[in-house]
Length: 339
Image 1 (spheres, rainbow, N blue to C red):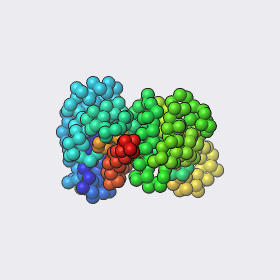
Image 2 (image 1 turned 180 degrees about the vertical axis):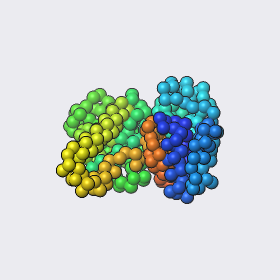
Image 3 (image 1 turned 45 degrees about the vertical axis):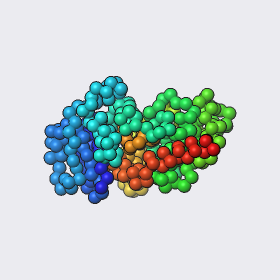
Image 4 (image 1 turned 90 degrees about the vertical axis):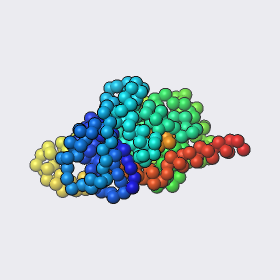
């Protein structure tokens, strides 16, 4: 039984959609127990609206405080010791939960993950790794929001951790690693890219394929896409916004005339299946890679489906022992350096 702690109070749609997602997760799998962390009366009141789910697979963990989206992350983590976020992360730290999922304050999740759960020895920075849909399946974009100012050594670690994740969780043998750049040529890029490129090129334990331009990302030009968080978050948000606009325009076009409405009825089943492939919520949230325990951040406006998928994603992460494999990889590098 995998115990997954979920922040019932974090996000724009808490607690309703969060709890709905938790119920969906335990209804689909018998090997998950969800620990809903939050204000007990509020959480229980929401749970009482549902029936027919396996109640023994959901437990309410009291936490009287809530970290709001606009709060300064460091102060929030320090001062709100009984917040749903801090209590949930402490469950992971103490081994009472395998993972923690939250749609709450991104900065607080980053600070709490590194100070409460803690980084694996040797990990310089912990990046958010977001799975994004592509023409060939999915790619891992990291850092997608944690470290806006990163050094070349950080990006090299991101590439190694991302490769481990894609190989063992997604099942891609020798995942292709690309660094985001403004051109394919090695001499192009800003100072960070130019400094990082030769370091990635010299890594023997990753499959580095060179630079990747933004337009190649939707085509699946690389399996692991490496950059600092400023660039990564811009790519992620533009990706999501463009997808939403295109979907809206397609729907509008289909309803523009009687002929298009008839055509829409004919193509609707195929179009629906195609659009599913580009729905990022089906992949769950973004794990904070490089921690001693698993912390996953979902979108702030996450709904039930994304929460449910994030919970299932945690099980895959733990089954494949990703944190342990990252630690082994770093230890192997240290030993090689000593020799």
